[in-house]
Length: 428
Image (cartoon, rainbow, N blue to C red; front, side, top):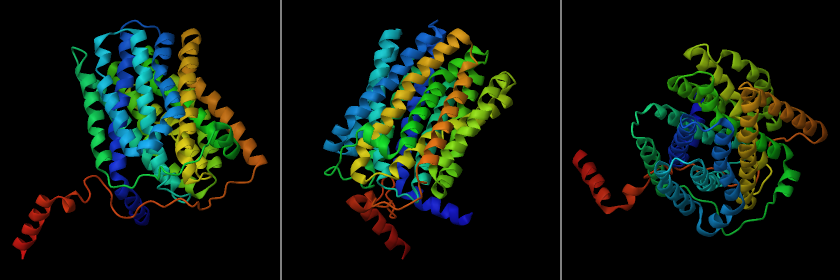
């Protein structure tokens, strides 16, 4: 166990600035998503319409996945990330100006483009720092950062906001602060001078399970983020209970990341995807009957649900990147985000319509339907294709020297160097 934590520390330390920026970014957009969902419900906008408006956020993901890699390949990952996050930060307060479904839909479309571009920067960057023996655990740490930020964002829903502006200002401030660790990191960025095309058709030929897994993940994650608060509120839960439901769902996904990621580094990732999908397939429909059982039951039910939902994407992405070269990763990451985005769009629209016409239980039934399809498809691929044994790629491994935020700044700035020298001489 001590060896595991020692190994974990050696991975986290070089990537700490990267993970810190990810936490702050996810905290901000998670808080904004749930806030908008609740305010649309309070304003009397029906569930189906709210689902369409909120899912436009993920349509922006699609545009980002198809176009943003060109910007990244021209200016580099850090500059692109800072530009997109800064723009998102400036747009957030506009939600306060006009509470109109059409206007909010347009804002969500643009915000989705910005955040999708940011995640394209982060994921393609991270996968160049990993190899096939540690990609599962590194992607798990990345997802752990996203879910930690997202879960904390849900707790911020309880902040008192009488005039409706405070939450938007907090979101904008979090985005701005997220720029600091990423812009100051010493972590080397991917080489943007060499890159290959990776269209979706070619990616599917290489990694069909990765492609299908990313789409299915988007379908379920989009439904949870977009409709989870609406589902809980429609079943009579208070604002406090709704925040508990959302928090523990994401927290469950966070808890499952490290063990599942480590497991996927030892076994064929397709088997791991099939096992986790089977878990969600079995438990999801039963959650509906415990939703009004009190805070403890709500927390436990949502925790188990999150354990199954939020591990699908890192397993699928890790499986896909096992088969890719570094020069293919930026556009391939765009295609994987595209697939997840398609699920993020289609999932909330279809499920919100089913909830509107056939009842709220369809929110949970959809999780079993989708994971059942993933199990069948994955089993067929395993039966007809060679097992994906873990092999090393030419990928440059993660750095071993610390590259965390503010690293080496004191070595480069004369004032701090003089202070350090003075303190040393004083000791002697």
